[in-house]
Picture (cartoon, rainbow, N blue to C red):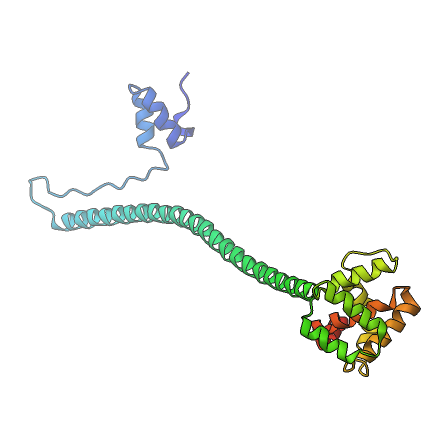
Length: 255
């Protein structure tokens, strides 16, 4: 049973005709389908072969219009293809540039962080070196020992401590340890640094900074009354503070 060609759509009719090429009824139904509006071209010549100028002009205009329409459609297709290609290229370029920019930003950020960290480390190392220098600068020359002897000639304890310092080659830390051991006191590591820190509040009094005998006397009194350390340690402690620089030594207590 044949289908109802009048109810079929143009695409369905075309598909049917392609598989039933001998069905003239289907072919005729396709060519006369209501949705297909064919414009019949008027005759270009009369029955006796004379050209009809008006119809020829109409035909030329029709052909020209069809060409224009065809060209416009071609332009639209080309533009659509160009737009599609442009979008594709823009996406690829954007992805490539984004990746490149992200790498550049990461490199700049890494460089900035490395610079900041390096600066912080340099400051830290400098501070540590300065502190280490302060802690290890615990040696006095023979000239300073002799000058101290002159200032402390009436203080037998201080003179005895100077003898120990001289025996240790001017090394205040070694001398302090020997004095502590001789007094039967348990010796700590970095003894002189710790003791000077404990005595800083005494050393940094304004009326004690300028006079070595007064400073040593005050330190000796402080050691005997608060810590139980031998008062003879007052001499290496005072000289240690002076070697550090009294102002720097006292500034350290405020930091």
